[in-house]
Image (cartoon, rainbow, N blue to C red; front, side, top):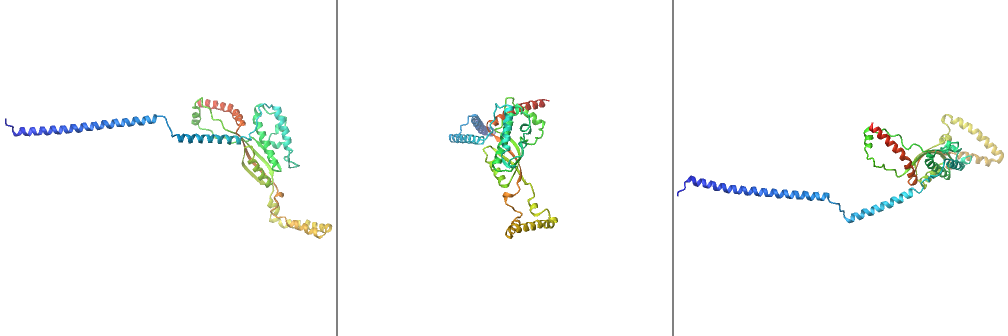
Length: 353
């Protein structure tokens, strides 16, 4: 059997084709296998990541011990700090009635107003300086609902007066209790009000950890007594903060020492020389020349700077804030609770409209 050249060529082409197809098939199979393995590995890694994200956190035992130690230390420090600052908190008598409180207030006001000072031997002119004119000097009885806050205010007033008297101030001019804590806040936008109304009904507002009251206290004191009073208020067991302190001389010391001006200086010198000559002549006649010379030396020793103990006192105006961290803070928070509830109801009604 003879095979022609064409048949040989066709058979060669067919064999080569079969080899090429076999190679391509192998490559395709190998690529598919690699893709399958990569897909399985990716899914396995993704599953491992998901399991880690959903697993419970297991921190290092040393970290847990350190966190617990710091937490216990912070709790102990907080308890000690609150105990220290609350040591001077005001005591609120829940059982006192209106008449009993007024009588106590009047008796203590009389006692405090007679403390030693520079106003005819007393620390104040009259009881009107306490800031409760209707209760101390009038016939008005306090309202039952006001008794807790009035007790807090009066307790602070007594503390201020006793402290200032112990420091040797000349006069307590005025004490204005319970002044506004802050300027009126600007109206909130409607969106902010609506956002507040969306809060969960069961969520409770966080109550403050303290309650505070502000006072304006005016008094007259010399420099040494003023410094002593500020230090005494800062170190008082009662938690007191002197927020602002303004003081000024009641008279112009330089003007008193130098005269009212250069225009009147010559006239003043001439006028002052006459009584000086008269004093000198009188002293010479009564006590001799030595006494007259001492009088002249005393006049010459007076200058612009005087003895601090003889200087005119300062008129001091201070804004003082007192804080309570104990039972008084809880009472104040309870008093504010009904008002806050009513305000929330009003805001909710406005939001619905």
